[in-house]
Length: 155
Image (cartoon, rainbow, N blue to C red):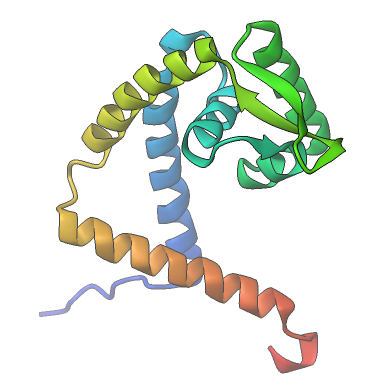
């Protein structure tokens, strides 16, 4: 009786991660479509809700947007009255982005709904499985970053 060998190659892991990421991303997109906003705008507002007022470049780094994309997102959100640009208290040359009352109200209620949708999306995993997966994915990401920093002859 022959046993089929499990494919634990890097390419197999990449394909599984890719497919899982797309499935989770699609669930996330569906949960925010009723807001009439794109995922990047939602991500900016969620960051401001959870981290507080932030500098433009900090927001871009944390939500993976280029400087041009973050400017466009902030312009859209400001036009809708969800955020405003203010001088940073310690350095008036620097602008920070803050949620308006209207923006805070919207993202608080929307984020609660989104959180429930994401719980449903990952409901096939138990709490211990989620913790393990989070731990392993962090380890993978950190390992990749460490390898990128090593000189080519030491890899």
